[in-house]
Image 1 (cartoon, one colour):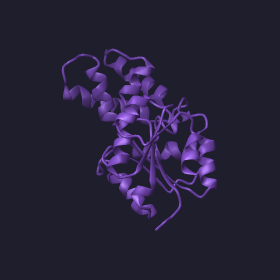
Image 2 (image 1 turned 60 degrees about the vertical axis):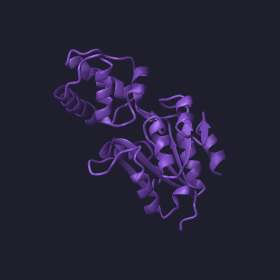
Image 3 (image 1 turned 180 degrees about the horizontal axis):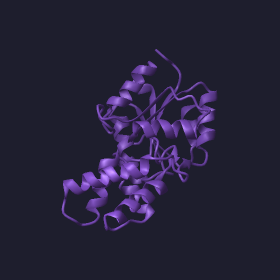
Image 4 (image 1 turned 30 degrees about the horizontal axis):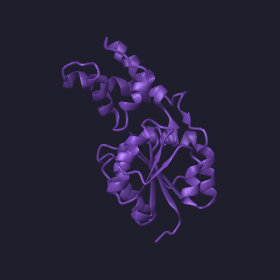
Length: 220
């Protein structure tokens, strides 16, 4: 059994500040459909479960009737707009690169598990953290249940050969806390992301941090 410290990170809202680009792209699509657009902070409560739920949440906030055909069209168009490029406003939060470098220097196992589409997750991780050796990088795939289902978190632990109870799962939303608890992992909630301390605590965070480097104190 691998006895190195193991950390699985969420991506958006935890490692990367991506909310501006998500909001800009979705608002562009909503304008095309003559629908109401939203301020960037509002998107922090729309995201977390993948593109389909993002679209569903945005349409619910329109106070309009549920329209499956419209949801599908907006999802398809958003993917076309968002997926074409790595967006310039999406960058690591302050302190994240230093955190990852310190963990790597201390021989920690590092992994990423996101509900962002898999190809984009891999692209953003490789582009944003070229000097960090993530052992596993996983985004949303059609044949794998997404977070908060613990399946992929447990698969990562199995591939790295660690006991789930010895894994730290780091994220910024209830989705991540639920994933951690369902996988019997230690949940670390971060306050620089998309949700607040109450949500993180309500859904089982074992630790709350407001600065990336505080994670080092917990782990090491």
